[in-house]
Length: 128
Image 1 (tube, rainbow, N blue to C red):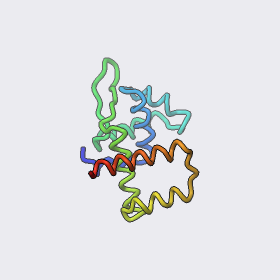
Image 2: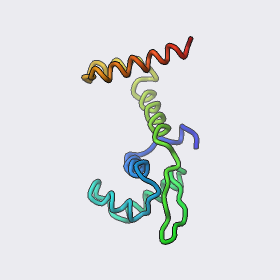
Image 3: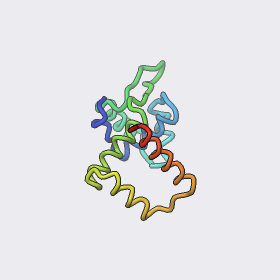
């Protein structure tokens, strides 16, 4: 699956989070995990799973009694595709504009600042 086709809808993120936590899961396991929050019915879960299989986001294997669903996309690839989409749509592809907005609007902890310095230092060393 190419990175550009990984953009997930909000409802797909909810299901993927459950499957990234633990997989495989059956329709009933997912239904029980999702019936309280966000309050989905079994038919809603079933419909979403079918669509996600059709899109290639999930795959399943026939289990002894029920289909076993697995993520077909890892979390890091989905997060990267989502971030790139946000960057293109909102910040016209400018990482510095996005970071400037975050720095102005969010209080970073000392640990987060040190982590960001480390990431930037790693990029700098990579270019050498």
